[in-house]
Length: 263
Image (cartoon, rainbow, N blue to C red; front, side):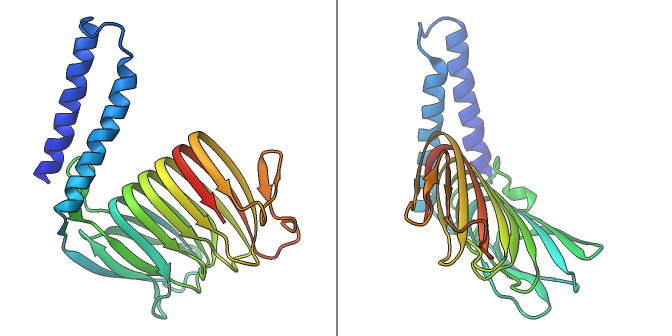
């Protein structure tokens, strides 16, 4: 934890020192922000590589959250850093069950027929304290029986979502510096999907027999869509049978810097 605070504190001092030199006119006509942003990425990359080499497992906590006979559930996951794996399949009475490296803070509240669950990392693993060598890996399953809306927020991590068997009607994925792979629902009717990402690689897999409509916006991002399945018309990629399809995905992707692959 101390090393995490030391890294971020040192980085802020370095950026502040460079800005002071620029304000004093000692750096000439250099585009200072053109230097700071790439420098930040380089230092962050070094920090993660160092942490991977010196990886230390954090204590894991097993958690089970009952579904309380709810007719639907809204699950919000805030995972700052590490590996995140979500799949389908729980014991009969549970909405969620799995193992959480570093522990889990959660709040579950029933509102009418819906169960609302908010999950986050304990405060000692907030980004300012986190050291990338700490293994903050979360791996948990969700119920196949309960209709879901799922919202995931992540910072710097490796995310794998195996959602094919889940009844997800709304999926939101927001990530910072990460690699994200999502196997999307196969039989949930209409699923609205929104992906918002900063600096990352995103891979979305649409099950066979499921139609999709794809819209994307991005700064320095590239998008690679299987046009055999999703022909492009204007700025939209869409299955020819999208309007009539029983199971379909409405996908919106907003990227900063990175790549998107949809198949």
